[in-house]
Length: 152
Image (cartoon, rainbow, N blue to C red; front, side, top):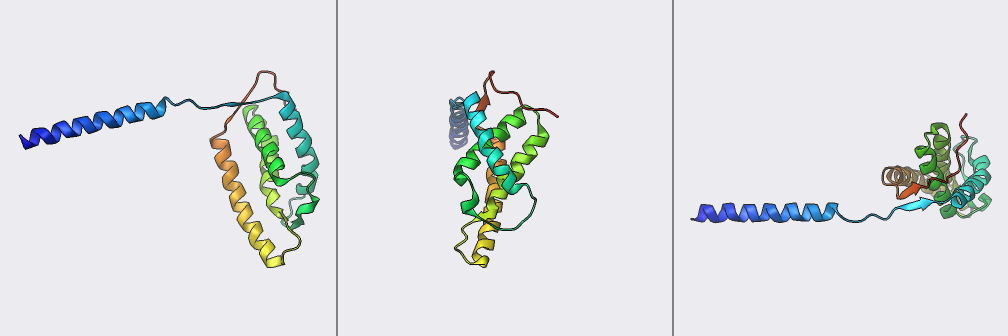
């Protein structure tokens, strides 16, 4: 009899786990849509930032040089990264990725050089992780009316 009670317990536990797995898989996911206006605004933001970071240098820059807040630039870069990924514009996507990671170069000029260098290294690692996570778990979905990317 004790063997039968163990088997019944295992079957019940297995059934509960399968029900929990089924319930977890049927959750609704919110999907955001990229409007043409937000795409245009993102392009506008990135066009002002790209000249600052496309020199491919590793030098530290003052955060006051940025025309917008870092968070606004990161949001614009994420929208464009997703859009260019969906449109298979790999060259533009790599430009956006480099720009996103190069934002780590913009540090507070009031800090001493060693602290700025430490912040640069930490920010660079964090931004690489953030962008990789974003591109693998993107919450956006392009609408049918999106503005076509320029293909070269």
